[in-house]
Length: 118
Length: 109
Image (cartoon, rainbow over all chains, first blue to last red):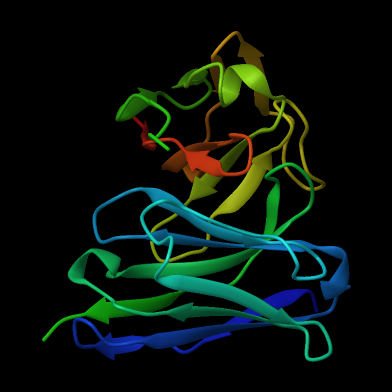
């Protein structure tokens, strides 16, 4: 079964860190660049980050540059998002997604809620 | 990285067509043929319905079609069905980044 299963969300205090995981199964994980996308409550989708197939190229949205780090473990078919210095503006449902080509985000994780609150 | 502009809402009766616009700039929509569209139901993950401006993934009905002219991309849903009621988002490659549209809520009357 082709799927991305996400773990790692939760409630965290402002200024603290959290790491999200996204485990792939049922397809060739190493063949895909991977994205993180988020949706704040009542807001639209926001692109967060992309990592290349081999993990050497990483690009971030301005809103998270310098605070978030994307990585992947191709042996474990798992994508990660390390989020540091979290603020209330980072409260959102976070999704991981594959990139079939040129932004065709074709396989999505189920989403995980991150709430930044004291 | 400004969001692409979509109308907040669109509506139509069953069987009718609705077209949603997605306006960007020459640095994103106008500069690349990498525009995608997603259908998003509350509580679910977004679903890819159009990629590379006008291509449909396997399993997506041909009622969904995409096009682009200059800096504006469009999604047309023909033969509206009740199950098409959802939020729709465009997305474009923007040269080393990606940007989503503001989203359009489609209501089937």
